[in-house]
Length: 338
Image (cartoon, rainbow, N blue to C red; front, side):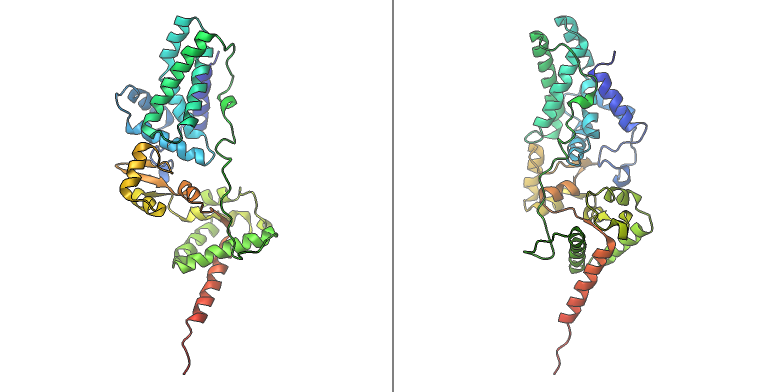
């Protein structure tokens, strides 16, 4: 009979299969490290390092990736961390079951529930390197307490029963932005077009339309299927029947997926030394991930924290907005007569 630990392992193996995993930035295409293990190898290494007196960089990176993916509404790395933590508690759970005469499936269910609750409670104020140890201690304490009280009778069947699908996807609304300030744009198609044109004007103002145009050429040529597939799932594409949903993209797709800590600290308006101190204390707003010896901050969570809308736009609208801004600029730069 499968218990909670087995269900978690089967669930993660189904999610990861035999694909290579990147514990540094989450995507092997954006990682500078050449070696990327499959989940089975990653899991074995994590369990081996679990007995180290000090937290290892592997566990620190796994927790950081779990926080980053939680912000995206993806529980893959959260479940990976939970599976590795639970795997290290298999022997302890068996001893508790034997010593306290409690069903093993009940003990492991208690442990999993407590570890998952601890994961949620340690989002703020606990450095990533300390999270696994806190999860293990809480799981063991909960197992002893509940086993002693004999309050649990049955175990759950699937790990998903304890997961709230809306836990990380229900994020506070971002500040709205519009090209026409003070106006109430009720037509979704108009609002969608204005959104793209406004960003085109901003790109022109910052002298980066050449790079944006090359990016648009790749989208139109079908060389960016990962971006177009994600953008096509946007909840509101008012003119997709006219422009084609495959050409839409998020503004963050044009930006680098990760930036260094100095750039992130500058964007947040805090000193670099203070940013590293916040990372060590676990209070930095966006969970950084470690790539080699450097810390990298994911751009999308950083945009969310800074309340910068990650808008869905269409290349045609962006280019029209840039062209309009360019015409206005030329008009004001016209030489004076006489």
